[in-house]
Length: 160
Image (cartoon, rainbow, N blue to C red; front, side, top):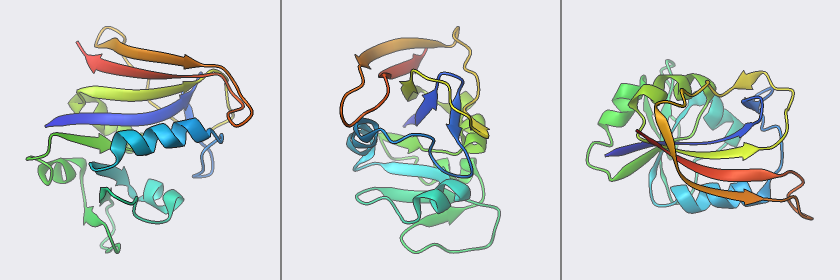
């Protein structure tokens, strides 16, 4: 199984504020959907709450310490438990939030990284990556347009 992270970050590693995204970038939402559709997505409960529903055409696993059930999702109490449910899958995606990303980085093989070329005022940040551990496999750069207000890049990183 390939364990992948998919995340959009600002130049200053900000990923959110008040449990919301900091930007509206339709091409990134489309990219996220294309990459993750048909796969399992693993997220923390706060990330699930910010989305508000299971992501369609994906197996949704939510990690929480709370004894709750969420319709359309499998609920577990740890990242290890979530990954154990996916042992026979080709690739699974960690989709947030910050604490789940922090726990997942040492276990991750690939990162689908969208970098927005601007700093944002956030209260939630993606952990710093050790550049020695990662190599760029692919990179596409995009200029702002009428729908996407920021310069951004899609970068695929693989563990060295």
